[in-house]
Length: 243
Image (cartoon, rainbow, N blue to C red; front, side, top):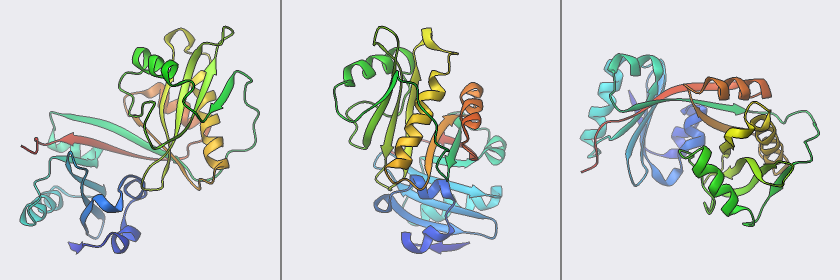
């Protein structure tokens, strides 16, 4: 495998989901083989090996050994689902990463859906997430949030929300899509997701990304129906603690 230590040299070889997720300042090194790319990063909490492509078990083992020889003990990996199944990880999660690389056709948005760029709704959004989407990755107060899109019911209560985020990588991401239990199956998730994507494109995004658990079939079908037209499935697994 060819080792590449500089992010700018590695970036042209990286998979698009790695480019979206890896910040240059956490990049340690990368490798490329004929059919796969390997990216090693230190998030501050994990030493993370991200792998994409048609990787073999031998190449995966070699990347772990190469990292160890450089003094980095890998504590978390992201691997294509097919090879992760062969490894039978005990602490893992399957993730589907999706993106839209062109703006959506103009579409009117329901009047009960609005964009909020200040902190005026933070407490209400916090409550919505705590009650209906407690494993959300983005919460009010996060410095990478550009805005929230919220949907309200006839009583002006927030029943749906999604965050429009720009990561430090520069990537634009839809995060923490949440709908109150009492408002599900009414198209609220589609409304806030589409409105968030439209706003991100309007603010200059070339590509809009989002991630979802692969087991959440309803959400996957919804994002596909909206028009997120590319996806990459991977398994994220913890190997052991840094201690």
